[in-house]
Amino acid sequence: MVYTKLVKPLLNVRPPGLGWPRVTFRAFASIHTGAMNKEDNNCSKRGGVEVDLRMPLCRSVDIEGLSIPQLHKCLESRKFSVYDLTACYLERIRRVNRVLKAVIEVNPDALDIAMMMDREREQRRNHGLLHGIPFLVKDTMGTKDKMQTTAGSSVLVGTVVPEDAHVVSLLRRAGAVLLGHANLSEWASMRSTYYSEGYSSRGGQCRNPYNLAEHPGGSSCGSAVAVASNMCAFSLGTETDGSIMVPADRNGIVGIKPTVGLTCGKGVIPESHSLDSVGTFGRTVLDAAIALDGIVDSPTGARLDIRSFPTAPFVSFVSGKEALRGAQFGLPWKGVWEKVKQKETARKQYQIFGQVIERIRGAGANVIEYTDFPSAEEIIPPGGWDWDYPTKQGHPEQSQFTVVKTEFYNDLKTYLSNLAANPNNIRSLDDVVKYNATHAEKEGGRPGVHPAWPSGQDSFEMSLETGGVMDETYHHALAYIRRKSREEGIDAALSRGDGRQLDGLLVPLQADSGVGCQVAAKAGYPMITIPVGIATGENEIPFGIGIIQTAWREDKLIKYGSAIEDLLALKLKPTFMNIDADNYMYIGAPPES
Image (tube, rainbow, N blue to C red):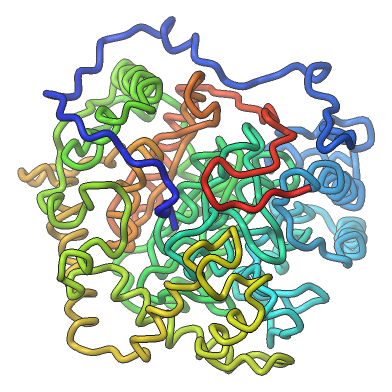
């Protein structure tokens, strides 16, 4: 999920147009990247305790920021072993997780698994790119091992999943080493309308490694923060609406949210089967694409309505900046880019976006302004992200949340029924709500009791009220959001109204208050985000540009996302600003020691 009521309101101003000046590369080159010298970023203190921010060396090799292919090459040339690499990442987690709280639980078997992978390497050569590469998964993904799968909540502690989530089993089969579970906004931001983004009762408050006083984005916060701060080589997250895109954007990394159904959600704690998608985080498009290849097998195993599917691996579409020559991109203005220009606190971001777009044009691409979603006024909330805005206007039959709250009730019940062990006897959402109310001091089951959830568990209660009944209102809402976001939204904008297809729609992710990625979420369409800079003087955290495509065109997202990445050649590194911050920037977050 993207934003809550805790987000500061936008200033509603009506500027006449885009108004980006033509700029040169010199102007773009001056953008602050947040990079720091090693001697400037060694140690700091939090609460009087020294925190070692240095990346551990791996057999004298500095692996900070190395890509998956670079790590693979080091393993193949025996510069270090899988055991060495795994131990190095575990030490990094030990050093910085105490302040970032990105990892909710470390796999006690990680080093044993690493030794097994080393033995495999002794027995044969020519392993795949993911063999021996350490990764993390969001704490909604079942792992049949000694770790818990809890969605960050104490209510599911002690439960045992019947098997690994399908995506986890695919990565294990490829030889990747599971380091642990990543923190998240509890229950993937589903439980409350008013909450502290990045907080869970099991994991605490996850923080942004660039500015610890800023939120990391959610709900897949830990997965993104861990990659950004070099706690793992890549990670997995899930998205219903913005939960991959926004954390990737705010942490200066790449996120890929695939078309709903491209990756299999079996064994993942669900939110909405119509909107949920398992995706990947990487420090580069290449890494995120390699990880995506690792979690996609037979598409028909996940969905039966796939019309087209790439025959080549996604990594084969990774390109250089030369791929931008002749490319065609659109800029949806109405309800999207206009919000960025209106936002007083995003002036630096808007300036940098303009510079980035001019560089894309300079590389030979045609960037067309005002390629609007025809349905923009119907599907984009005027005040920013709000997935229940139509209900507030008296039209639940047009609301995305009507779909989510109904499906969550049923999908959770199915998930709980398949557990191999369930010590708290949690069989339904009703049981979860009762548990949270009974344990209100820990789980905030009532409004005003827990500072991380001022509204208690009101989203759960709204879901409970549906009883999971898929009535006429539900079916109308599902059809409505799909039609308005697909045929009358993204597909219409991509076709430009004249039949010529664009290669992607370029959108912001933070400065528009999350509405661009919400359109893609409603459609179930794929999206990628690429870092473009840090806005100094604003929130001092990274931000990126997103690309939206139609269903099953992840190949185009990877092709042009990597081309833009190569063009910008941006190198970001966490600055750990405000490392001693003991609270969130928003009202209601609990202080932490």
